[in-house]
Length: 180
Image (cartoon, rainbow, N blue to C red):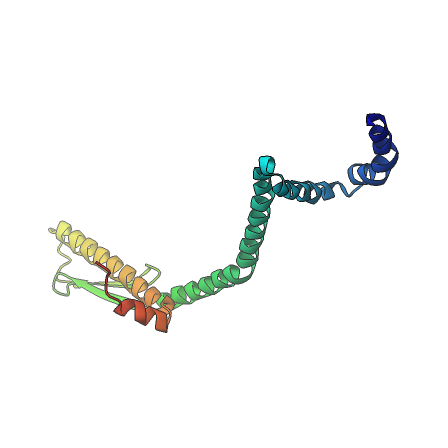
């Protein structure tokens, strides 16, 4: 009986099934063949747990394919839209100029959204050669205040530009009461 099975394997299965699968370019067909055979273990209660592996493999593969499809399609489009919106925000912020004064208008600084100082005006009355430290403090204070205001302006322009219009679900969620 065993001798017949061995002869049957070498004369029938090996040349017709095993060699074309393993020896040629179709070796990858062994994976679904193995998974399919593992699925048949479901009918044998002692080894039915083996059928979980191909199910987990199929769920994982299809989940991965769904993620790839999502990232290639919708997510990449959203990233490109966000990038173009941020470029528009940067261009809009670069056009706006903020004027700041310190020391009661003695030192005036103009700065744009790219944090580039456009102009500095110093009142001649402040330019006292004996009190250079006060002039330095006024210029430093005005510059720091201008930078802070420019950064705040860029942030408000970004929020104004990139915030989506409210959808009905956003409105309903904002009106919802906490469960506690």
